[in-house]
Image (cartoon, rainbow, N blue to C red):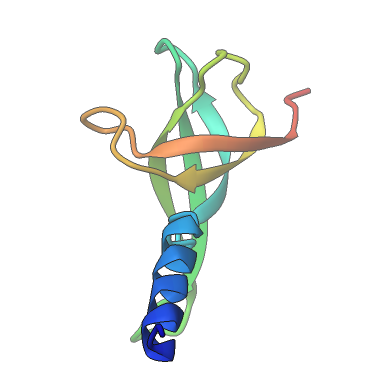
Length: 105
């Protein structure tokens, strides 16, 4: 006769093996404006954040240049886009295109 505890641990082990590996969902998402598309499969997006100055309590704009992977070279200067953090794709490219929110006019 089989031990009931052995059967449950074997079933648990099989259930753990069948579950797909999940990635952490804590990747940053930013919105920005495309400022350059001169490189192949890469666009430069400027993301502007409004932060409050610690001492003077004045709202200050801080801009960050993000190098974004654009596989099909579909972006144009002036597009408003949503980008997501990803693994390093090159020396400076760490973001990928999620969607184009608004086309340049």
